[in-house]
Length: 226
Image (cartoon, rainbow, N blue to C red):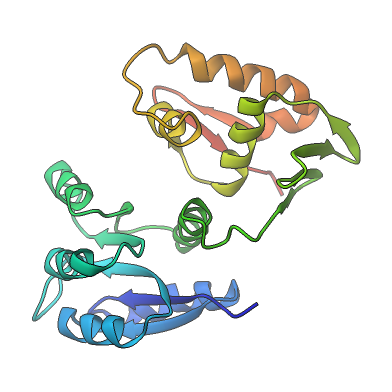
């Protein structure tokens, strides 16, 4: 399979190299741009770019304007990076169609995990029908799950929930975000729906259920102790 191409846009060459190194190790091809104008030139010249990692503060054109220009003609996934943690910036990013918003400093491993989660969610990696993690094996096409070689029975939503956790390993996920992606609607009511499903899923996974960690006051994180 041809390597997916990702455009990394940041005016700091050190930051571009850091992100690029982690992405290349995961098998991605990386294009780099040091400012907004160069980013648009590369993006419009290469239809194979599958995702854009875009810094907010840049010379010539800032990240907001670059994202705005991209969104006029393309729905390619965009991850925004910023040194600020202002809620208004985050809201503006989502209004412009940003898929993820990450504040600096960040873990490159978490960034790569989010890249892969977005590409799966948007169908770019939809040909991957098997997910494996520390003895847990999911066959997406056959809708089957096994733990240490033993098949387990999951309900439809438990299966979808486990799939979402495995695709977002190491990322703290709010209950609202989980419900939006697994139940496919914005959730404004009682969070007991997801808590109940997580409890059942943990039980069916046995010892592996400990990988689903509770983030108090927020939601959950799927994380394996190596």
